[in-house]
Length: 495
Length: 95
Image (cartoon, rainbow over all chains, first blue to last red):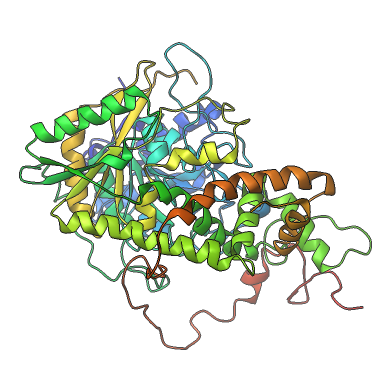
């Protein structure tokens, strides 16, 4: 029988409330699983003492009948979230030794709702990457393998530690963040569920910034129901983030009817890419059939500017990153390079940043610097922002035609081998986000749902895209897809 | 548009990231690959299109112009690589 650490949030919550299990027992089961999973390299900062203390107070609250939504549920937190007194490095050497004196709003919301933090999760450096190979902590290894083949696979990125930890049952759920697909792509690569909510649904305060107009936090979970439970606990208006929306948070879980009768699901023709693997194509067709069988109306739609989403993203995101990451100067926190005799402040900045940032982060900062520099600002940055307006309008047009949600593949392939893309040019890696990045540019909610296995036994995911602020409806549609797909496979334990 | 080593060096300087001279050629190549990809944007007709400033239409809230969490010198300096006498310390800026 699977251990307590394999439980879903919903099942554990119900068992806790019935007194069938204690938070201390659940937490202990997860800590034991984490201790045995060093080979995955998912947890990079361990906080077992904090976890056991939180579990004990959760048990007291449960006994007293004062149990908020996540009371006693052990989760992992992506290293991008600042957590008070606990290392928060964004997977980067430049934040080595940084101990935030404050707690991010999202992690605070989770703590307030009774969640137990087990530790911090590995990720691509500053969330820049699609394979978790840019982390200062080293690669995360996907718990899934190609059958008996022992080739280590990527869990995806940037929330690769979160995805691997949830898939391997090291925690019940985890936080992720998504700037171009960093929740949905790793979810698809690990057979887990990941939702990026509407831009503004979760506060960005205290989350290390990558590209502020695109970044959103979201839950990574074992089921759609768990995503609904955890998202509700994470989001809400925050005066400390001026872009956080002052809108009521619906009861996402209560809205999970799974009834899609009468709903219109759009299938965008531009997502049928040249050279798309046949298995992805087949998965997509299966997904369409499932939604149709469940009573949804399927319509073909066009999102004409899809092709330009990745190029626009690779102007806008690096531009914002170059500005956001200017703060890492070796003065106020983190790493400072050892200086030579006679070095002045400029040498300090240049050496610190060269040592502190890895190659992908340096590359993106410099691309961003270039597209914002005098003479290129209009040609690149302003043009990309205009294209972004058009991409958003593509979605507005189809929603205005009565489309309720859009169904697409989540990724162009299953998980690939670690190191397989090392010799490829950076653009080949960027193509991983081809189906997800449009959603960030348009500020929409998107969810990845595991929908099948490929011939080698690796999970594949489908993505549903919803209307702004209608996560409740999107989750309910995803719930219908999850039920129809009936995905129950788990990786066999080798670690 | 092609980036040469001089441009790569200038960008690295603007970004305050030290790049060794023998690494500039490879860096320029990477820039050119990425910029070649971005170049597709020039195909799009953007006449009369407003550049996006905010993805969700909203009026940013203002708060009262008051100190919210002052007097935290120790907490602010706690993470500094070099703090002395209540200040951040850096190498000499002027001779």
